[in-house]
Amino acid sequence: MMSFLPLKRIASLATVAALAVSAAACSDFLTVKNPGSVDADKLTDAANANLLVAGTIGEFQSAVTSAAVWGGVLSDELLNGHNNASYGPVDRRDFTNLNDLVGGIYSPPSRLRYHGDSTAERLKGWLGAEAAARDIRVARMLAMAGYGYLYLGEMFCAAPIQLSAPKQPDELFALAQPRFDEAIAIAEAARAAGTPAAVVDSVLNLARVGAARAAMNLGDPGKAKGYASLVPANFVYRAYYAEGIPPVAGNPTNLFWGYVGSPNVATPAELTAGVNIDGGYRYSSIAAFASVGERFQNLNDPRVPHTTQRMAVLNSTSGVPSQYLPNKPKSFGGYVVPDGTRPGGQPMTPGASIRVASGLEAQYIVAEANGGVGSTLTFVNEQRAANGQTPSTASSPDEILADLRTQRSREFYIDGHRLGDVRRYKAHNNVDLWEKGAYRGSSSETYGTVECFPIPLSEINSNPNAQPGA
Image (cartoon, rainbow, N blue to C red; front, side):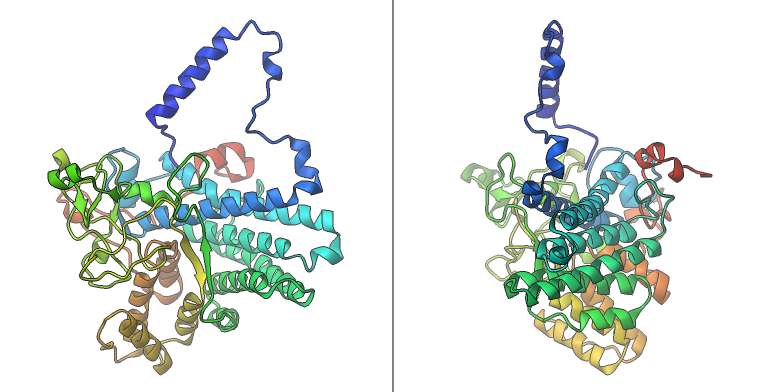
């Protein structure tokens, strides 16, 4: 994610460097193997097929979190509370690819796209055309590759593919579509071949929601509705990290836990001190930087829970509480509906899963595709009622769609949807929801005009087709 290393990591690298100097006289030093590496020839061994599949699923987890965190910062779901000079410009939407964070943000969806595509092709080669056409692993890899293209298109201004010239978002969404379509076809064939229904339905509906999302981004609501209307209402697909497992080396961790201050149950001494304590949990001010965006604060909506009081974050002056920190929103595993006992909901945990696709998202897509009609208003009121809100006062098609957008922004808060949504609304609906004017009340800074992440310098420098003027 960042180009900066924790002190413990820096110290370990220094130790390695010192050992390297002392070992310079060893004649076989260069033959020593990295125990964490994988020999290249193993990548062509069919016996390792499931390892490659698992690796792609790991890349999927990383891409989901990256889209959720950084898409959230750029689209104003989250505020930056970091004191590093690279972070503020992203929050302010005033940066270029000289910002060192851009490369780290680009890497997860780019790796997911590559791993999904390449693993699917390897599986096809090992299995043969007939078997591959009904193998659910191939379908899963294609669906996940589709999400790689989808995230690149939603987050980036453009992105090269396999050393190509930069492809515009519409081109990336168009590349996602056939992958989703093939995943759907293979999943349906896998069902006919006897693959358990639960396994098939998981992949099949992940691909259907992805295809509908890509079609909406391409400005084709009719096609999107066709995919989305087939998704069962109770369908949920999550990116799992280490749900319920304490953070230990090797366990995939949801980045949000650290970014909101690694909340842990406060000790008696911490409770007495009362420093950055909320709901019996302590939030570390030396770690927290992702705080709740201004338009998502104090909504009295259970889908967007946060600390009941402002907390100190990394860039707080002298530790003065300044920002609300997000607790688990509706899309996160272990979500708890705020109530009188726990008004802020459940604090983040290290391995909280994130809902990536669902039957509810499919219903939102269908409603948006239908436009501001009576059935959409009915759906909006169902969502409002389910979350303790009074009926909508919308009386025109535009007002109905505006309320639908509001409900959607709360339902999918910080789970990786918002950046793609605000870009889509502006591109296809002439609705501009970007923050403008004074930056967070500043008298000297204003929001910039950046609405997508640029191609990172690392890609430009290594790809002759991505260089300016190529």
